[in-house]
Amino acid sequence: MAWLSANGFPAEGYDASEGLLAEARARYPQLRFTHAELPELKGIAPGSFDNVLCETVIMHLDHALIAPSVRRMLDIVRPGGIFYLSWRVTAGDDLRDAHGRLYAAFDAAEVRAELAAAERLLDQEIVSASSGKVIHRIVVRKGS
Image 1 (cartoon, rainbow, N blue to C red):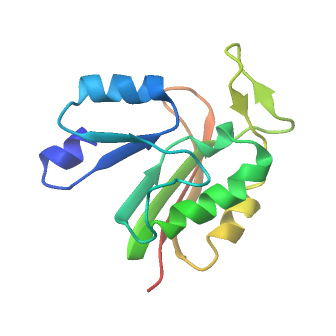
Image 2: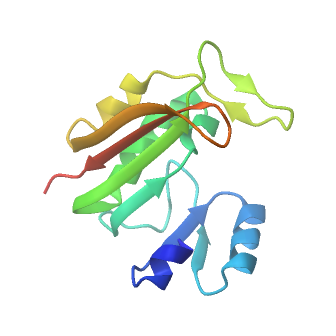
């Protein structure tokens, strides 16, 4: 976000964690960070953004929240805008790490179904250089 803002692209961040928001605000006081939770994203109007980026978040959601969260994030993208979504792939059963964070195991087809009306620009799995874990990335352009 800091790079976007510094290069003339307006950017703002949303998170459900007050702790993460406080850290972001301390590091980047010139940027706007607001509390919002998936799937509702209360206070964000449909079609508010040219681009939406959701990096490795949905894998921490309960299964029942994944599809409505993806649907709502696409909803806040303007027609013709871009939505980038990624998640860590968990094979088999859901996992919890030592801190209790959920890593949901779910089929990418569930995400693709919510994005079916959009033009798919990228749909790939890669191994993260930082974690060594498989990451699924999907980029779509919202129709007009």
